Length: 318
Image 1 (spheres, rainbow, N blue to C red):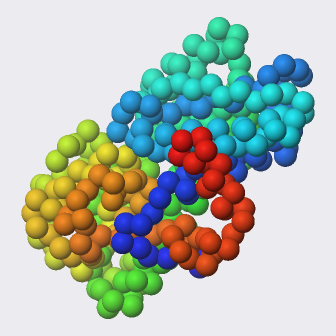
Image 2: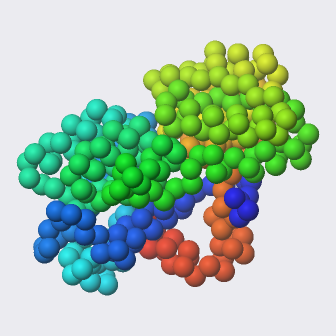
Image 3: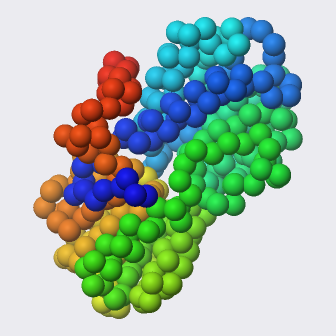
């Protein structure tokens, strides 16, 4: 994470869009022909994501990235001469729903050539056994370390930093600021737990005290959990929420007038916080982002590939 930078809510959706564009480009380069794939006709890429629920903001960015990639790939002849088409299913970020929709598609004989198996690690974990059994190529950007298992999931490729890999800059900030006690509020799910364990291990190894509080994904008010965390007097707080829960964390923070520095983790940092919260509620709230994604940074303004990508995304409504 040597190329990371801290910003006060200046992060955009360039990161998730860029990841999925890269992912589909990898399919094109590799030929994308796992066992069972058709040899002619269109190349169907199925995206399973949340189009109507708490994480739909991520879905919008990821689908835009796929559309950019598909446009570029088809302009160069498609994948082995086959025109790429995008299909979607609304799994509502629910593993059971995702599995049901995928199985319906497979039993109907509509086997996709490749799949983006969900926007969260929970959904990906539920879909991978089915996709592996059917020998269907799958590619996404979820970050649970348990998914990085080539012997178990030989047709799955992930292109996202694992949650633990994003932790060192937070430890560096804590050291520079002289913080001794670190707090964390996180969603009690696979992704949130993985994030928490990564932070806990890193801060404890650095000789700091780590305290945490979790909330259920269905919670719309996390005031009790934040009050519990506040009572333990941490010097800084990491907050982790997937989708709309990020806003519930910050709204609850404002409600209890807690102003210690809050730092978004990988999950919360990708949400459009500044578009959904008033500036008055975002004092001492930070996100980690790549330097190239900061407006006006030389790594951004002087990067022709990134500039072309941004222009392509805007042309498609991004």
